[in-house]
View 1 (cartoon, rainbow, N blue to C red):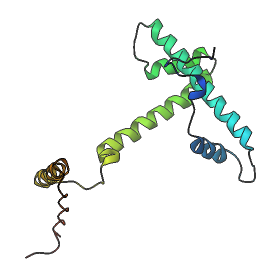
View 2 (view 1 turned 60 degrees about the vertical axis):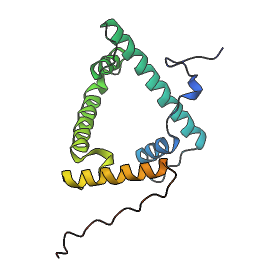
View 3 (view 1 turned 30 degrees about the vertical axis):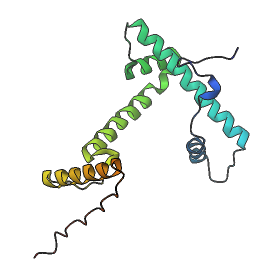
View 4 (view 1 turned 45 degrees about the horizontal axis):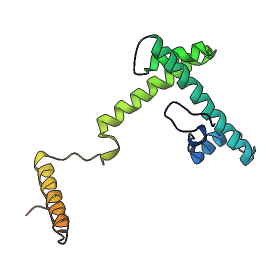
Amino acid sequence: MEPMDIVGKSKEDASLPKATMTKIIKEMLPPDVRVARDAQDLLIECCVEFINLISSESNEVCNREDRRTIAPEHVLKALEVLGFGEYIEEVYAAYEQHKVETMQDSLKGGKWSNGAEMTEEEAAAEQQRMFAEARARMNGGAVAPKQPDPDPSVES
């Protein structure tokens, strides 16, 4: 019988993006150092195991507090319980930085925004255009081409 993790998938199903992990590994080493592929795979597996360990202990801390949602303080407590107390300050600082960056992203409109603000009238016109395209697709008709935006620098 193979080991199962909390969400019911085998441990072999849990992984981290290989390209991202390889990039992180290479960024941490001097440029003249090469890492064998099997060593990269081992490092990735170690990271997965570490995440599983911290997640499991965070869940235990959460359960001891009769909570159903793991909060950042549960993760920090798990680090302490597991003997990684010396990293708590650095982890907390990274968490605070993440919160700041996330807040800035949401203020900019997040990943879906192109940075340009729309007036209410422009948004309503865009919505109507999108509705018309959707109706045309549903009715099997041709999609109306997007109307070019009027150039605000050109006055009539």
